[in-house]
Amino acid sequence: MGYKRMLVVILILTVLMVFTVGCQTEEAPQQEPETSEKEYDENVDVDSTEEVLEKEQVQGGRVYIQEDNLVVGTMIIKEGIQQSEIDTLANDLAKELKEKYPDKSVNVQAVQGGKNVANVQID
Figure 1: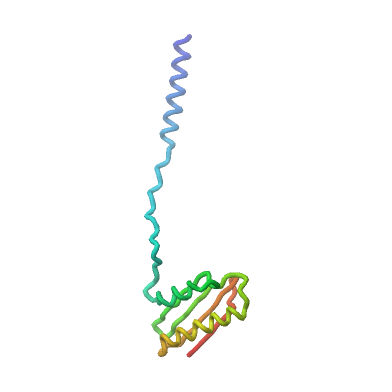
Figure 2 (figure 1 turned 90 degrees about the vertical axis):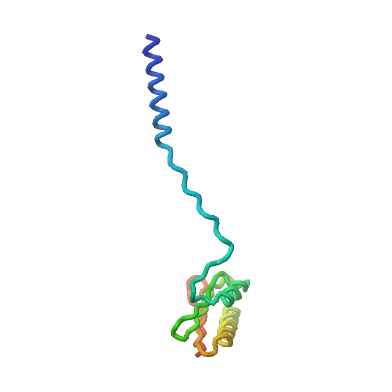
């Protein structure tokens, strides 16, 4: 009787080991570390975009140069910034872009809380 009991215990342990080893998942492939440099589309004015992002009121944004003689500046404004300050930011950016691109129309839009809070157009 001891022999059968020992055989059952060994069989159960073997089955448990097979399931444990067989059910292991493969390790996820290691992702390449993110580079610290930001990548932009080729139609993005990187210098102007970096200037926009340096402003403390701005959470995100980009400056795009479009083929149809249009420069578009977008800004995502942090919550709590007053409308008068947003208007000043949008107007200042529009003027800067018009100086940089005098032959193009300029449109600057500011968004806060998912709503368009400023839209400045200079032709």
